[in-house]
Length: 116
Length: 115
Image (tube, rainbow over all chains, first blue to last red; front, side, top):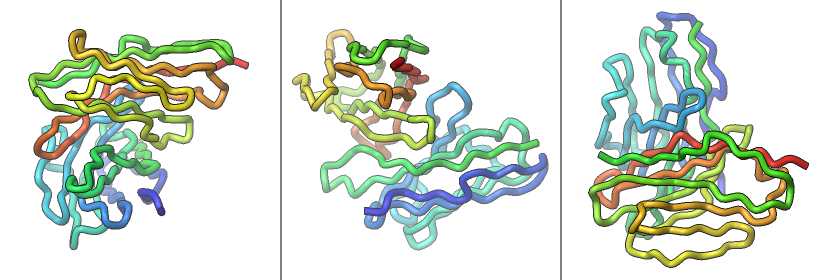
């Protein structure tokens, strides 16, 4: 099985620029999550998709953040007008349908964003 | 509100020692799931174990074992005969059993296994 993939792995951008990250979940995983992890902390939930529907957004997801999952396959996370506080590792995870009785999430390698 | 506390920031052990990582959680839900993940230096979170709130049976899987006690809201994880390759940050996570099943993570425990 191919795992969750994320691109790019690293992104360095200047403050004020827009960035977009991509996540390709494990095939047939209809549930997809985005998390953000800052240095020395555990990941924090950002948003959740079930198929193509975005069902929950954290308060951490400000208006500058937008996520999509067209056709219920890959997902993108866009940050507009980046700020230095956006510097973090952005993690994507996927999970199969709940009917399968599997509740754990499988994580990608993450995209490390540095805003200068 | 749900919360996960990992009070141990960093632990150092010598290879072949046993080590226990502590996790204490808070939730008002009666049904929930608990997980342990490993994050090696490469950064990718690797799933280790899952426990359902209604199953307090403790198990052993190879060098890993866990102790789940609802009475003290603890879900501790033990590595027996530690190896250098076990060096990583270990995260405990809690998820609701309804809705999105999103995770609430602890702050992690960095384990260093010295040769």
